[in-house]
Image 1: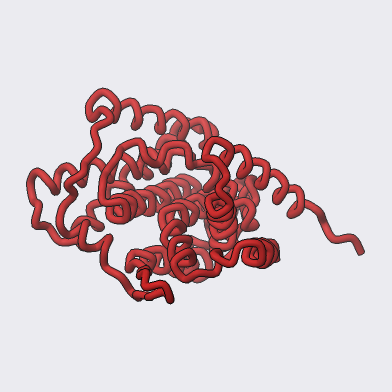
Image 2 (image 1 turned 30 degrees about the horizontal axis):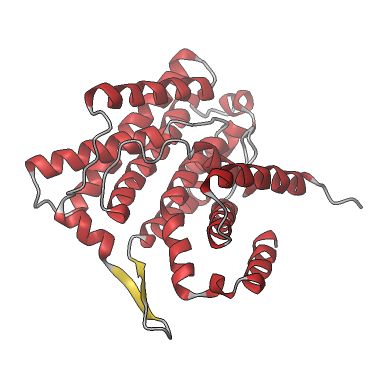
Length: 309
């Protein structure tokens, strides 16, 4: 309802909002944050919290882009995505193992691993940006599902990589709703002690959810490179809280045991929509972060109001 209200108000004030090119831009902007959010949803549902996903995405995208560019510039997109998924899953699984082994809050552990990964990137990689990405990644970013020509002659395109978010959403929905692991994730997030008495292996569940979040983060990193046609290791830093806010606004409890794919995608759309409105309104970028933060607080207050009988 809030999304519809914002669309109607903004569309009335600025008809450019409804232009196809703007809608395509919002779809394009939702892909990376949507992939991150689906991973955060799975970790939150199991009662954890992960803030290292942007660091994992940055490391995976930079290392794979550099390896492919230097060693196999003709590599196709499929093995690149497989390597990104595997690399992200391994880093995520390390998070899960540390959380289980240390018996420490996952927030603290993932803050630590985030710093370790960024600390690795800074001295060994620096802030160098890859401008010449592999041809397959460049072509993947340009491939369009649909082209549209406006009345003024301008053209816009809906990129094919939006399908990555659609596939990830269906896979995550199936995981949470149709598998025993999905049932275990909600059980552990609802009450870990009771879930353990019922026979669920807490360690396996925790390692799995962090590995799954890492897998999606690795793929998101490659999508970021393909869409921007460059690999900057520090591009994604600072977007963690916005992604977590989108998942919580979508109905997931920070204490675990709840959350849905549909609600998470709506939360991502809401945050993307607010960003788009600020750009259309010509709000200076220096103020956008503060306004988005205030909007998240306001939206959180509205969602916390319980209907009275």
